[in-house]
Image 1 (cartoon, rainbow, N blue to C red):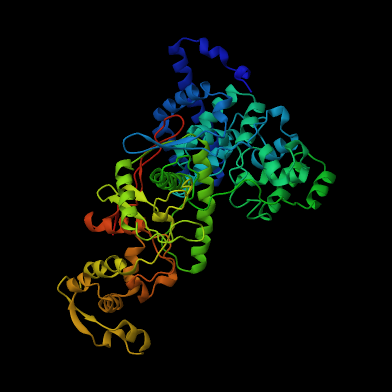
Image 2: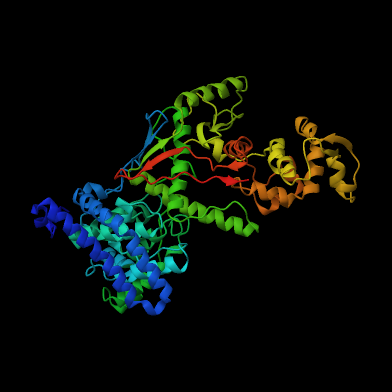
Length: 599
């Protein structure tokens, strides 16, 4: 689709000064739309909410005028290639050298022009996502007002929904996904310009070709071939509705992992299509009865959590790439509103969180691989190579092989700048000739092992000193751990050699750490652990075994290095990352450093 459908081409001929005035009027007009819509829905909110909304409009008016000028300029510079869902992101090291370009390298993707997109797919998306699509100006004023009111009522905690199809494609293409009033306003402005620049058919074309159908599958044509083995034009009505259910939550509606999850949404789509007059009741009922059979997983191989495809040959670059992708993906998750958790009351809560995490991770990773981000990192390639050589040299005499042919004895290393919290180098395993490294396991953050005695200072000794009841010269009892586990006697009443806290640390005495953990209370010590980003600590770890590094799932060198950074950073924890700057395709900076947490 070309932009010969632009309905405001004549405006480009106006003098620059007049265009600026027009831009300001248009931005003001959009703000007026928000306010009028708010007045129409005033019965749903208290007067305070109305005053709050008006204050927001006044506060952000100057900035929004500038944002509207950006929208005009950016959309005007776009074309069909702008909406191609295969735009590689680039990762740079600390010296500005390219580490990797992230691309799906997807030769199966087929872009369909509007005339080739099945009408059932178009109607399905309109029915379920944006029933006023063909008539609206790219946004729904009442929906936006409801969203802003929700933001005010929840004191800035919730700002979601109310996104038309045009807004969705604008958010994916031109903006980041943070949940703020200003971003929502920008989304509306870009949608307004999209509607002025492109026909509705073109916008729908871009949207459907950009939709992610899980498993890094984009566009209705590739989805039809991968899941049903037919072209899009050969899909049944029921199959089409089933596929159109997936983009709403690709991870949850994944046909290969959860083939039944999309059925309920398929049914809703069919019913909505009938209510909108796109299909008859008889067609709806017949489609509802149809059994959906998804073909077995074929050539698409989804990477495991955190394992990314890297188009580099160097082992060290591969480990840099996989970690940089993790950091960038999790940051996009944060912008999308995902709330990271490190403390759980029950095992069920932990498992549910891991499920949410994996789904959100996959969705954010898809965006990273298709929306042309520029990611500048703190990763030092020279340090990376030196660290790799150190690990290889240390383990060079242990060459036993596993069944896969890789070295059986492995190791990982992480180097962090404690002042900034930025990762400088990260090694996920040994170099090995003849072993392909692309997408390899990065053990520094993906392999979880028991930390053993290295866990004692952060779970036991530092918390004990922090409590105020102990210092370096405090006398502890170095009891027998085996006897403590077998005896019914209270640990506090058991006998043991006297040892100072300082010497207990130096000599890494298990009995002293076990006794002290009992004295301060394991839950007290765990409160410190909960603040330091240990992602796999579960409720079952709230036992004295943790005092000796006995954890259910273990931890890794990345988490341990960042936790030890607290000791040299005045007691403050900084979530580890390698991101220095992250820009979207429009060179807009979207990254902000995490705030320190007092531990």
